[in-house]
Amino acid sequence: MKLLVPVAAGLEQITKRQLLLLGYDKAPAENGRLTLDGTWQDIARLNVFLRSGERVLLCLATFPAKTFDELYDGFYSLPWEDYLTADSQILMDGKCAQSALGAIKASGGVAKKAIIRRLADKLPIGKKTFSETGARTIVGFSVFKDEVTVTLDTSGAGLHKRGYRSLSYSAPLKETLAAGLIDSTFYNPDRDVEKPFADPFCGSGTLPIEAAMKALHIAPGLHREFDFTAWACAPSGVLARAKEEAKDLEKRNLPLQIFASDVSEKAVSIAKYHAERAGVDKYIRFSVQDARKFRSEQKYGVLVSNPPYGERLSDENEVRKLMSEFGKTFRALPDWNAYILTSLPEFERYFGKRADKKKKFSNANLACGFYSYFGKAPKTENP
Ligand SMILES: C[S@@+](CC[C@H](N)C(=O)[O-])C[C@H]1O[C@@H](n2cnc3c(N)ncnc32)[C@H](O)[C@@H]1O
Image 1 (cartoon, rainbow, N blue to C red):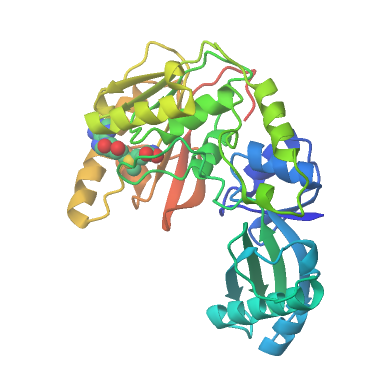
Image 2: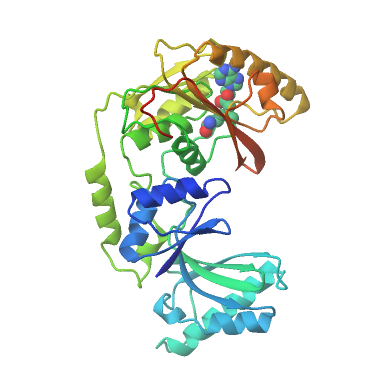
């Protein structure tokens, strides 16, 4: 089967590397998604293990369509009876760019009509009514340059929903982005388990929790369910097998040095709660502290943070001042690496140092820079 893994802009190569480590060496990136071949067992594995992919889609077909009639015919020609049952709850999820078919809601209606017609013609059901009380199936169709790609969303809820983050505090990072950012830093606990990792603006705890999960090889999808397991067409047992594999790979009792702090007491208590839910609380040292007071006895370390953005102009002045003072704090740790995700314009000017590397990401629809500062890392390390 052909599988598609949509990824956020900027995370294509990181996610590709995650796939490679899972044994999938052919996954070209195109139009914001990675493409690979796989079985139901692979679908289960990808859902359980992938840290940065958005979801795992099963690609049913691509066909050209410029009109509603062509869209209807294309959908009708697909073997829906192999994937859906008479009670499947069918949700259409469409998007369209650079194509004649612009009206996405109307296109979704046409496509769904074709699916129902096909089921009515092919399924051995008497009354041919569709209750939609059964398993949820999100049918995706993306129309790009008049080419329709039809998918089934095997994940259901997006893969950022690991299950541990139930409370929110001040602009939390999406877990998939947080994991991807961490993967693009020098934090490599498999090589140096005691290397410190710090987030002095931890908010609800996403970065330190994802860092601990990575270090302990806790699969992000271990404690959640996925839509495909309720589908009649999916073999049973594949998810259980993938979760068993994940449990076997988990590590425990590592001497991790992960530090999480925030100036807000409430944020720290929420972060602790989330860490407990993720099963990593005993590996993270939490404290209520102003980031400008961040110090470390450790010579080398990795700091990954997304400080407040300052969405209003008055806040922006505050944030500039904070970044300028935090820049001085960081320069007292010359051998540390720092990675800062921010949408603050001219961040480097306020931080007081030109970044060694810059990457662009989008966080909650804000264009952000991910600014990397490299300290004098031990020579053995590779990015
Ligand atoms: C954008 S949020 C971080 C979100 C976090 N990455 C998450 O996923 O939940 C910025 C955080 O910086 C904290 N903050 C603001 N000023 C601070 C300061 N001077 N020192 C430490 N933390 C501060 C805020 O309380 C807020 O939790």
